[in-house]
Structure formats: structure tokens, C-alpha cells
Image 1 (tube, rainbow over the protein chains, first blue to last red):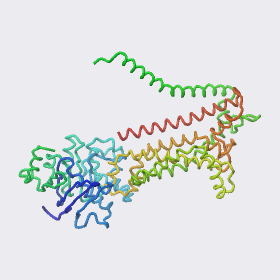
Image 2: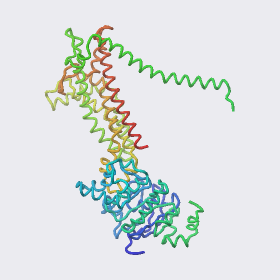
Image 3: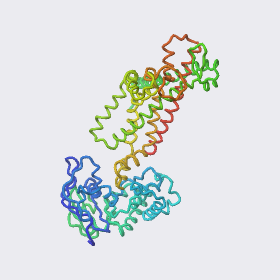
Image 4: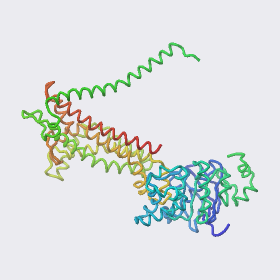
Length: 253
Length: 297
């Protein structure tokens, strides 16, 4: 692993109500690389990624134990401004969720809520973000059209561009391709590989082939336990644990 | 497997009976429209539509008869506007609170409490306006009359707050949670999510709720009949007595106007005007709600 660890997750237990989801998870997420959180449905991978930008705060009965250190500070410390934090740690969701606004306003939203009004500046950011999101060429003629008119794959790239517009350092992908067809999936994966040059990326997936294609490191979770965490190449060629091997060879999940 | 002949017959019979039941309300509606139209035609044979729509006096019960609907329309309009000015801010604020801020516990207490407001008979609201709100307003505005559009409109507004709130809250609740998550993930505060994402996304549903509330206020009878007064004057002053279309219908229906006279026919022409107004508003509201559903399917 190169450079300083971005997220240091230590002895993390999480609960929804009385139900424990994650059990004593320890994991270090490295910078400017893609870390895949892989496992079957219900293994806790989505819960884990949603701890990293504190989206779980919105869940009523959520409770956690342990520590998540983000760039040296406690992510859950009371002094942390969670809205500030979420600007730095962007997120792309399972189902594309463009706002019912124009393409332009979708991208500009993150800046507008920070009080940015300068139209020229906004236009610049919108163009740059759409280019980085590999969507500019397809939409540059119709920025004022509704984002809801875009295809599923385009909507997902719009959501990525929207996250990029607020200049994050980390981008979390929560199964970003599960609602997309193979062509659109390929485009998103290509984009993720491009983005890792500048951003730290974590991606949740239940798809082993996707983890193999896009990630540098893979964490395999099973029923709330982190079974193993290795460089992707190593895990896929020589899994240490029999459960990892069974999952990778398609015996379950 | 073949169905037994008698069971088949029973099934058919039940189907027919249910069909007839559903026809009953359709026939009633058409019956009402027919009566309204036929009596109104009789009215318009004696009074021209131009006079009806432009005359500024409404005095069918006097010897010097005038048949201008404008004073009644202005009374209706005035009380409705006041009601909406009260109901929309309070209704929307409570809808935003209930949908975005309230805990499940608070919501389960407040929502039923607000719905109780809707269960109070309107005649009670009417006396509440006349005997409680009007004296209260008199302390602030000494020039207000004993009967006024302000007092009636205000209480009517309070009455329709639950309607605005409940229907708007339904619309806001229907906004997919993915949209809110997306907004939070970009660093939005709660207020920003409520007003920049949820509110605009639910706007057509909210508009439909407000239009339905307007329609309800236009058709409201008891409160205005009791508290707004019985004087058809063409005015925009909320402090003096006015008469709404509904209040006029009550006045004439309660009196001893003989059948077939022109005074008698005015009830139906007023009823028709009222029906047209609320019908148009309800259609607009329905279309908006349908549009809202299409966006999120």
C-alpha cells in the first residue's frame, strides 16, 4: 500500500436496533486506489460504506462501536461538521438519483447550497465536472433539459459528475452498476479506473468479476465479518480462506 | 373444471348488483347537473347572461330586482383568499415539519390531532368565528363589523389547514428517499433538503392540495353563512359584512320563496356557478396529481 491510509477502521461493530450487522471489522483504505467491498447480499458491505460518509446517521436505530479514523481524525467526533465531511467524501448510489431539475442544476446543486451564485463560475464547474464524468459530449447541447430524460447509464454518470463538482477527495460507490445494462456498466467501470488517478475510491459490489476488473484491493465480507483483505490480484489467485474461495468460484452468493 | 350452472348465475347476479350500486352515484351526479341546468335555463330566459355577469348589484328579493352575480363572487373570492392566506403558510409549514423533521413518535401524535380539526362540524366553526374570533379581532381592529369576511375567512383557513397539510405531506412523503440521500451526500443541511429538493419535487402534488383546499373554501357554507354576514356588496374590504354564493343559497332556501319564481330560480343559477367553479378547480387538481404520479413511477 502506498502513501498514507485514508480510512482506518478499527474494531467496528454496527447495529440496526438490536441486530448486529458488522462484527469487529478492521480495515485500512489506501489513497488513490480502488478498494472493493465484496460479498453476498446481507454481508454488511453497504452498511460499511455508509459509515464512511456517515449516511447511517440518517437511519433512526443505527448504532456503532469502534473507531473510524479519516486522515488522522475521528470521523464520528462531535466536532466534525458532517455536511462539510460529506462534501469531501462523495457518494454514488445503487439507483441513479438525479434531482428533478435540469442537467445543469443537478451539477450546480452542490455549489449552490454552499451559496455560490456566480453564473460563469458555475458554468465552468459544470463543464469540467461533466467532462470528468465522461458525459459532456453527450449532453453539452442540452444542459437545460431535465436530467430525468437521460438514460439510466447517463443518469449514473451525471450523479458521478454531480459528486465531482464539489471537489471531493474520496468517492464512495454503493453498487453503482446494479441497475444498469452491461454497456452502461462498462462505461462506469472505465470511468472509475480513470477517476482513481485523482481520487480515493471505495466500491461496494456483489459481483466478483466487477471487483476483479476495477479494484486494486478487495475486502471480502461474509455475514458481518471481514473474512480477508488483500490486493485484488492476490485474493483472486490465492484466497486464504475457504469461504473466499467458495464465493470467488461461485459456490454461493 | 366446469362451473356449476347456478353458481355461474349467482356470480352474474352479484356482478350486476354491484354495477347498479356504482351507477347510483353517477346517476345522482347527472341528475343534479340536469336540474341545475334546466332551472338555470329558465332563469336566463328572463335575465340576460350579460346582466348576470356584469351587473354590480344582487337584489333578487327586493322590489327593484338586480341579478348581478359579481357581489356574491367578490364575497366568495374575498373569504376564500383570506382562508388560503391562513391555510397555505401554516399547512405547508406543518407538512414540511411532519415529513422532514418530526420523529415517528411526534408524527403519530400530531397527525391524528390535526385530523380531528377536520372532524369538527362546520357549524361549530361558524359560531367560533362569530362569538370568539370576531370579538378578538375587534380588540385589534376596532372598526371591524360584527359580521365580516375577515373573521369567517380566517376561521375557514384554520379549518382547511389539516387538508393542505395532510395532502402536501403525502406528496412530500412520496418523494423517493434516494433523492434526499443524494442531496445529503452532497453536503446539504436538513433545511436545504426540505426546501431545495423535497419541496420542488413535490410541487405539483402540493399545488394540487392547495387547489383542492381553495375548492373546499369556495364551497364552504356554514361558516360564511353564520359569520360573514348576509349583505351582497361588491367590495374588497375584509372588515365589512359580505355574502358568498353559498350563503345566498342558504338564505333563499330557508325562506318561503315560491316555486317557479325568478327568486327561486336564482338558487339554481348560483348552484350552477358554484358547481362550475369547484369542478374546474378539482379537474386542475386531479391533472396535477396525475402528472406528479407519472414523474415518480
